[in-house]
Image (cartoon, rainbow, N blue to C red; front, side):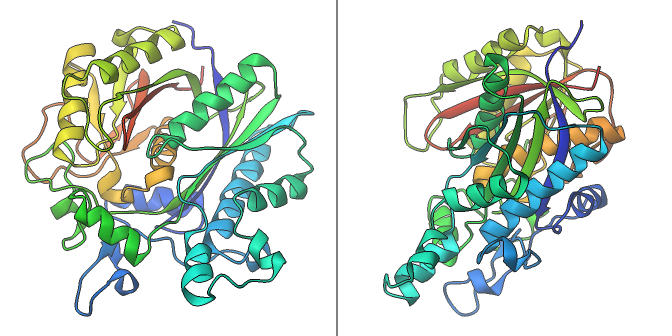
Length: 386
């Protein structure tokens, strides 16, 4: 099999582990979750809230909020990283930004603290186009720039869109960023009320994807960026193809028949021109919720060979919402580059194919799945560099 795809030739990461790619990787390899107790997220005195929040650490010149600063920092790191790996930008560099809830802190202040009163310049900072515009200005990029949004599947949606732009010849290169820094007391409490987020226990006690005793996910934040190009000389990984579909079933629940999810996986393999037998790893959505974990385990067993391993890094990174699948793609790409998959430790009886802790990479493809709230199914096929 000859892998022909789009190269991921630069990566930038802002996560709860820190404001760069190195701290992210070191945190994953430690096997220790990024989440800590965050008193600021408690709605009532005495509440304990575990969450993987991005701390302060950005450049104030990049914008007034953690959101803008993280987006710019991740994108800048990816561009600089790509340059050190031999990438030279073409004439048309496009920008895609995956956003579900943008500038939450600024909007909260706008309504709650300032009563809707802001100078015009400060109001413009609320717009999702503003950090994109300032980033394009910084590098003089003139390709198309737009947002994508598909709930937790937004990262996969962005990668699929970037590849489509490149395949169609609309751009020469793409900078793709996924940013979600939306943890406020209000947002966290509503995910708890939905019955999916766990805040009252340490991550490995609460979030155990594909293991007994899992109760849901710990919430997280991140901004993750990639430079994507067909002219990559030293890529981390190749994006071979992907697919998306919609259950058209329920605003939160998965269709129990799993027809659309299974078909999405099959369509992704077809789009990438590969066989299920070529897939060695399923980098799962794996939020630790009963219905999502059961769905992906069923697809794994139905479509893929018995030696296909499965893992989810959500116990370590937290569920980063709109940036979730992007930070998980970064895990696969950096895993190919380093030769190690930084899987979380297994802490309870679980699926027999579940990876347990840092695992040496065996040659083969990875399929990255992401199941967004509301029925957004997605799968992207990734390969090691040819």
